[in-house]
Amino acid sequence: MPARRAQNYACPVRDVLDRVGDAWSVLVIVELARGPCRFNALKRVIDGISQRMLAVTLRHLERDGLVTRRVLPLAPPQVEYALTDRGLSLHLAIGTLNSWAEQNQTGIRESRAAYDAARAEPA
Amino acid sequence: MPARRAQNYACPVRDVLDRVGDAWSVLVIVELARGPCRFNALKRVIDGISQRMLAVTLRHLERDGLVTRRVLPLAPPQVEYALTDRGLSLHLAIGTLNSWAEQNQTGIRESRAAYDAARAEPA
DNA sequence: GCTATTTGGTTCCTAGTAGTAACCAAACAT
DNA sequence: ATGTTTGGTTACTACTAGGAACCAAATAGC
Image 1 (cartoon, each protein chain N blue to C red):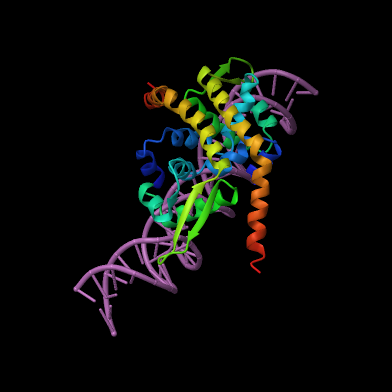
Image 2: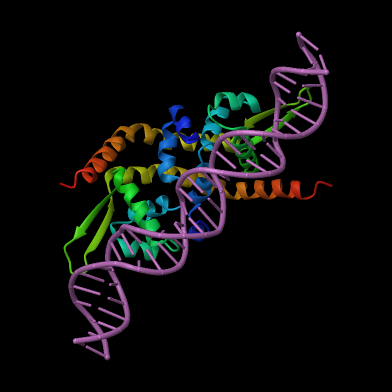
């Protein structure tokens, strides 16, 4: 368990990234930031996610108090998910990271290309 | 490749998280933000990391232009790693996330405990 | 009445990869 | 000449992320 030892490191960011570093959490949060949404609606809009991964992701977010789950007493029972205040504040924090990403993605792509090119031709 | 499809989603954050969401990258960046550092020095200070993971992590960061690698022409050749300006700016962006984590880690722990307790006793 | 579809999941299994352990090679020290 | 430091690479494994398939209830369609 190397990640555990890393947490002895007392680095709070690691906690966040353990939750949000996976492929889907951010996508779900961003989508829910637009407003509450039902399970299958989320599944449709987050293209490529499987039912299982959406369910797992939502459970995690719910457990951390980032998302609420509300079952509507309807015929085919509908479940509405929404961001909590905490989830909303995380969305803002992610926004910062997003800005950085937008400003730097071109530069990063160039760096990668240069790096790869340098190894490709060790002439 | 679900993560790929997710990137069609045109979500720049995902790019960042793909690089920085792993267990070690943030730790390395935080450590290098204190100043340049050699390979084994990093290995010693980042408790629990293996040689391979440190090497892999540094390669990734170098490829993205976040870290420079400088070989010192000494007897047992020493390699000094340092953050680039881009790496430094990422460190700042991570700082935001870190603040959020510090402010919310208590609340999150409580949410988790409450959630787990609720499932434990489905009385 | 019988089938199909929508709701929101859960179970089972596999493929991929994160991570560990072991090996490598040069140079200096003892 | 054996050991230790430097900075890795290679070979292997165990875990888990994630896809495919299944489940169950109710309404809609025919």
